[in-house]
Image (tube, rainbow, N blue to C red; front, top):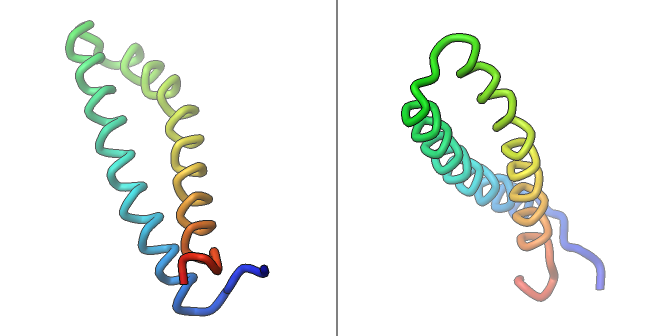
Length: 78
């Protein structure tokens, strides 16, 4: 079976991806804030920690977007 790619399914996929991305950003931001405050980081150290958190954050956002697209365009879910 072929994936159903219409405007309706693509907007639903984008909506689901946006919702899940916001949730991921909130969770990762909370963990970043907790670690930075617990260790008393400021300035350059906080920027380095942010850079360290950026790689898994980007991967999580990519994974969530791909998962939402696949779920919304899957013919079994229509």
